[in-house]
Length: 385
Ligand SMILES: [Zn+2]
Image 1 (cartoon, rainbow, N blue to C red):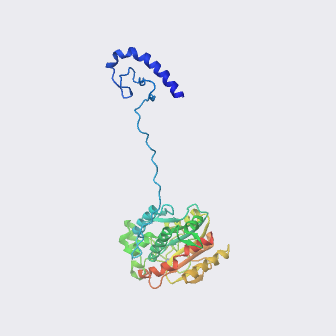
Image 2: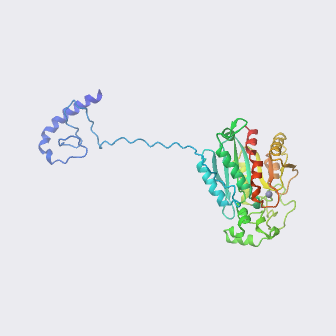
């Protein structure tokens, strides 16, 4: 109603104004704004069409079809036919892992988050993957390949992670989907805690990019005189002997060596600092830490002094699932991560020694190891649901 009234007023005014203007209207350029067929005197003057037709409002700009606001495409997870992690890869390298992490995060954006806990001496990232809700109130931590030559655990835990991603909404533990389980208790996985060391064990010192670091590796004495059995990081410090609980104790080499050398001071190594940050800062309510090592098909555990219940439940799960023999740890340790977890962080932990025979393990052991570890995470997360 208001529109019609306005229109009539405007039209009446226009007619009065347009009459004298018509005389010189021919010279007046027709602007884009003018919608009338007749030349208009003023560009802003509205149409002089007969009233009664649908009134056209004066517009400053030619009317363009209203653009639909762009709707963001709904992002859904499409499970690819093939797995990203190649379980047949005998030398699953840092680069392979990096590529898979990227693809996993892109594909399973709603269930996996990748971050870096720090950078090694040879500038490799210490990656950390969060499976489930990163804001979950409870966390479980898994580390693999703290010892370089034990790198078979890296593709194994990556393959386990991928399995959870693929079956996130269909797979269940005690009638709860993995999504439900890991939304409540998320799992932080460090699939390759010692990437420089792994590179040395897989490809020798040529894999070290920093010249002085490479020289250091080349001049370090090594067990059995082979780089394949390298256990330490690229600074020739064993990052499972660099922790503050029991630092410098136990059987150790006095100077840098491919294994069992603790360094000059506790907690000096980037890899150790990264793991410390994870278990003390990033995970405010860490319930369990699982460290994956090889070999011997045994596992280490211990009482934290806080509770015996959680430790015993964890021990039972690991024993029943893997069938490995449990070994209880006491005392201050020898600068290893486990005793730091037991005595300082006071969190229930296990150190699982997968595999049999010599290290690095033959790749033929992968399937057996995978089967023994496959359901551990859901069972432990189930404890804290
Ligand atoms: Zn080890």
